Amino acid sequence: MADDLLDFKNEDVERLEALLADRIYEFNAQAIDRFDARSLGAAIRDERGEIIAAISGYTWARCCQITHLWVTAERRGHGLGRKLLAGAEAEAIGRGCQIIQLSTHSFQAPGFYERIGYTRQAVVPDHPVGHASIFYAKILKGSGA
Image (cartoon, rainbow, N blue to C red; front, side, top):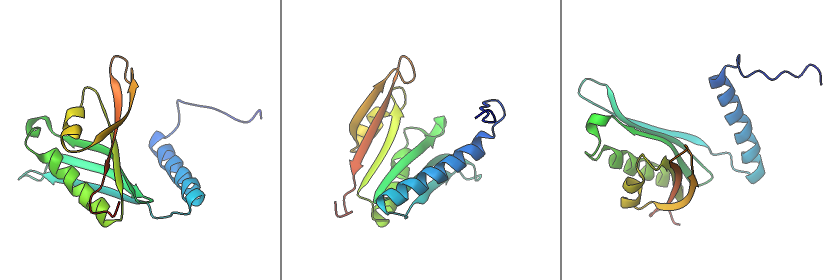
């Protein structure tokens, strides 16, 4: 159609991301008849109330997806990432999830995830160029899986 416009310069990307997430969830939920998606997130704060580590993701259809995990550089290697993931796993089990999945880059934390029981599922080389995206999963014990 002549009136269809494609404009990458003027879109409100955050609003567009939210709209797409909602529409895709609606489709997926209807496709498998599961309407139980819930956001998941937690933060660890220092004595001043500043966030020094945080995790986010969601649960849906007895699965948990971790989308972001971050620990401030000064606090890495002190167990905060492990604490966040353990908390997310416990929350996911409480929500009836059987599996948790996440991704990392080859220059981020693949060894960390492997040490705490995550199994490498796939690697996408050259994402970003010269590195790789690595996808992990872990069966959640206590979930009945």
